[in-house]
Image 1 (tube, rainbow, N blue to C red):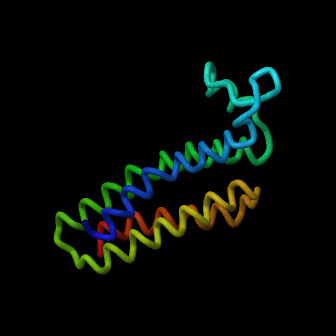
Image 2: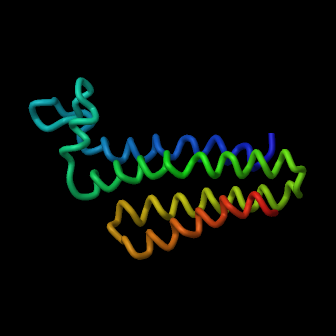
Image 3: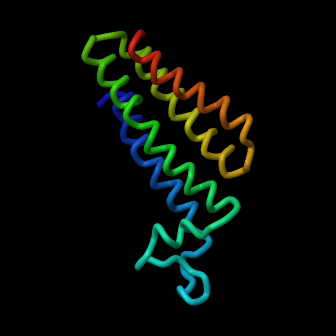
Length: 129
């Protein structure tokens, strides 16, 4: 398995990391005490505010970023581009997404948007390596 293929798996797990962050404050508490409601998880998440709401939004955006990244890695490999370049771009994408998530949770919208653009550019670059 290539480094880029490993990055595909990591990218697919990033939304789960965001979901855990969004739910973490309510895990272990009873529902009536404001704890996570597994009977209505989307409703519960929809009522969250602050960093939890931003972590939930980062989860949605992480899912949205997946298709182009996955297509880029697979297309680059199918076209037999240099695997070292593919691996480097994939690792840079993962780093950008981790920074993006941290900036989203920390409520840094301007920096977050810049890092989002970098991640998109990296995904697009995979088609042209």
